[in-house]
Length: 78
Picture 1 (cartoon, rainbow, N blue to C red):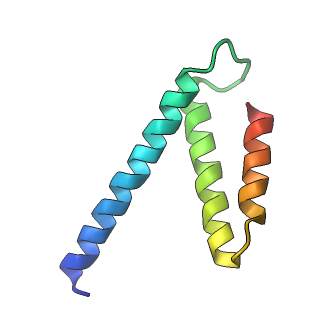
Picture 2: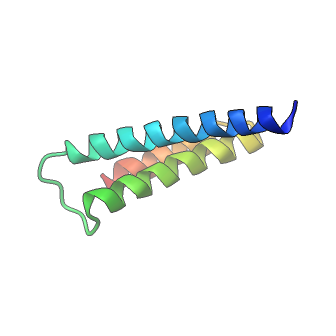
């Protein structure tokens, strides 16, 4: 794999993550009359980081437990 290949992979990953983040922002904006100390952008970014962290930890430990915990926390926040 060359440096050029690495850059291509990085570019694709960034685009994918941005689409995922945009989707979360769109979904949060569709929640009717929610109560939160966070505005829509803050809530969406919080959920994005929570989900990404759950995925990363799950991959590191080869367990779905972190993803399940992330899901439970997200449900509590919402």
